[in-house]
Length: 78
Image (cartoon, rainbow, N blue to C red):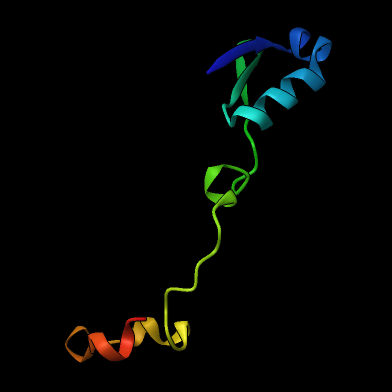
């Protein structure tokens, strides 16, 4: 994790933000002995770029209510 001061952040704000967004690596900013972490928003990483797949046949809302012993491979698996 990269560590910079507030002064360095102020001088390179757009470059630091572009770096965090491009790499996903957080940057630690220190001021008067206290630290702040600049991180990309969750979901902006590699997992967010994966293609969404439909793997559940039927209503996904009923999945928590399914009983293991009631599972039927042929009926519940695509």
